[in-house]
Length: 308
Image (cartoon, rainbow, N blue to C red; front, side, top):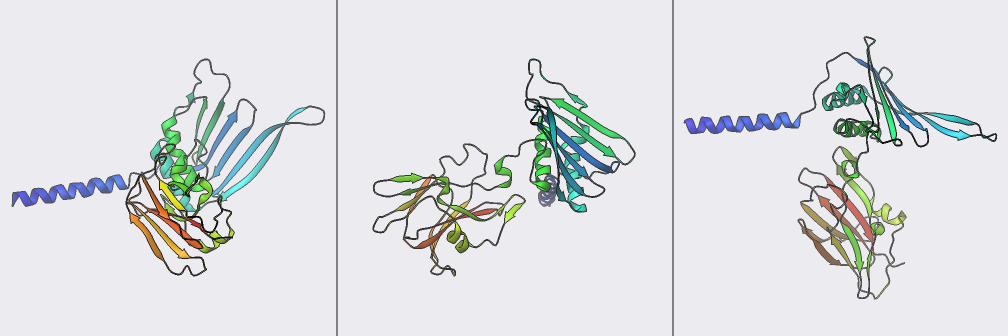
């Protein structure tokens, strides 16, 4: 009996830990935030970019100042203001909760430049609260790198721009394997051999795209010729060279007749992670390569072997 109770306690503790880790974004309950402004300055050219989050109107603006010279060589700035987005209350709450969790509202007031650095860039952050207080921070060739890196993904979720830091491709776009076409006399490799169709990746997705229409309208970086045997070679040699993608759990390769209805489906490959595989190509077909991941994410790529 004691053993059963112990197992139940262990199971409950495990579920509790899982629940806590799955919902690690804290709820911001401090003084309401009216606005957030972030300015980046390029010391080499003098250009600035100011992002303005107006949480009262739920609007995001980008104000850019670019130096220019007129016909009399007088130095001046050209200012351009663009409204990037109107966001919802839910998006506002999600963004503020994430920025609060990642520590943006508690960064230092000043991040001084390391000695000896003259060029580069600087930044200013201003958070205005409903009680009239302001949180102001600045930096010159220095920043709270970990905080900014995490906050960049929160900003990217709402406007497609990391604002305070660069957001790497693997956050918002799924991976692709290496693609080559191989004949008896040639091996041709290019990123333009296939086109992305549908995907679900992290919190991003592009669905219900027509495989047939993509093949009809896309320019592929290869041309097929009759009476020449050809294979497609898929490899994962460079899968993680530039990015940190998780491995796919399954790869499925399917061929269809080249028509709008995608008739005569034929599964050519259905297996897990590989180093390299090669598949014979039949002409006048549409091919789909689907990578599936443990968490339910997936991505599809397509090409065709139409003889023109």
